[in-house]
Amino acid sequence: MRQRLFSKYFLATTVIVLISLTVMLTILTFVYNKNLSDTKYDTLSNVCESVLDFTNKKNDGSIGESELYYLVSNLASTSDTDVYITDTDGVITACSCKDFTENGNCDHSGSKIESEFIGSISKDKVNKLSDIGIYKNLHQVTASAIKSQNGETEGYVIATATLTSVKTLMRKMTRLYVISAIIPIVLMFFALYFMTYRMTRPLKLMSVAAKAMAKGDFSKRIPVTSDDEIGELAVSFNQMTNSLARLEEMRKSFVANVSHELKTPMTTISGFIDGIIDGTISEDKQRYYLSIVSDEVRRLSRMVQSMLSVSKLESGEFVLKNEKFDFKELLLNIVISQEQRIEEQCIEINGLDEIESVTVSADKDLIHRAIYNLVDNAIKFNRKGGKIDFSLKIDSKRMLFYISNTGNGIPQAELPFVFERFYKVDKSRSDNKNSTGLGLYIVKTIIKTHGGTVAVSSRENELTQFEVSLPLVK
Image (cartoon, rainbow, N blue to C red; front, side, top):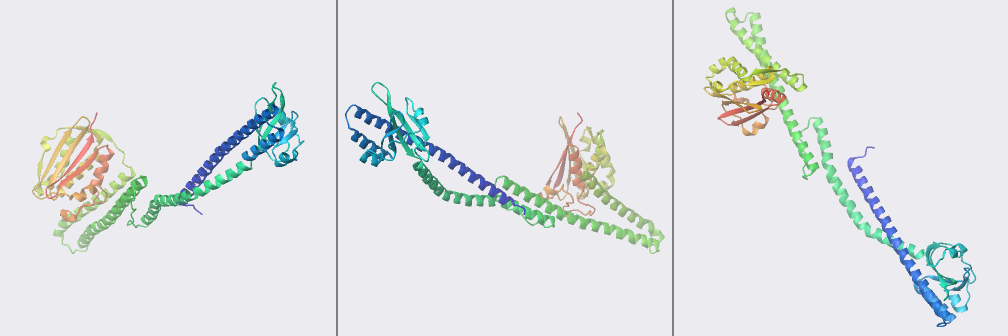
């Protein structure tokens, strides 16, 4: 079964937290255990020193033997230790247990401490874990030598303590640690669950929205609940969805428009041709109707050519054939080719005589196509008796070409979309119905391919201006 991102992230974080807490408990246990052990060794060392003082007092007659055993027994009971006094061979001669104090004899009397341990006792006291030959389990043991007045060893004092007390304290500490950690752990898990859910929920919604988009549903949007990377991703996803929805809407509109545009001229062509063939149209009118058929064929050709150009531009089939040419000469040729349309609409042309010659290195045919589309639009969407203004500026690296025309202009809300594929400003803005919504997209793609830029600005009911920037020949 596929494991979801939420489960992976939550489980991974949970494991990391539990491992961290376990490592922390292990470190605390080690430190606390060592501290307890050191403390107990200090206690055993103090017990040995006290017993040595008692034996010195017994030797100088300050206290009697019974008093010595009584003091040793009380000291051992108070410190929770066992104390043994041995001779030089390690044979126990005195013990801190109750039986020895009362009777002078006990189970330990006469027992011998293992010789290896006795041999390890030197001038300084010994601290180590050992069973000293009389215990079944390891004990903490501290031993010191009993010295005579002339410095000779007369015996040994051995103080021992079981490890049970340390283990009991460690169990209590561990239990306290676990109990005190339960509430924070539970709260942390709830917080972790909520944070993981909040982090992965936008991704899940994106998955659902992407599946819906694959089926043609572009209505779903991702709620933006943060300003972090996930929030930025949600914003980008929504922007992509909006663009795809707009593109899909334009595509449908384009298909509908093209279907209509193809149907109309084809119906016209078919009707007139059939009329000529069956004699419905008289011979004296055939030339007139054939000219109409010719215009419709050209319109169909332009439409198909535009769609083919878009297809080639998008697929990267165009290979730039750069050459040096005079941009002013190219512009003049384009304007002259449209002289008849300009005169029919009584359009005033300004600025051409002020443009200076400038050499650019580019694909001449593609640049011709881009500038032709801009001039064609300037004529097509101009008002009768309007104006078209041309200007050109040059800096050290680039050429800036401006073309503006009077007319209804473009609404500000539509300016960001005029260079997109299939986009058409409301057809009611022009009497010309031949636009396919591809001209400006072709312009933008061609200029961008040459490392340039194209921009548009407009004032409604006044003018529209396009700015083309192209790199110059070095």
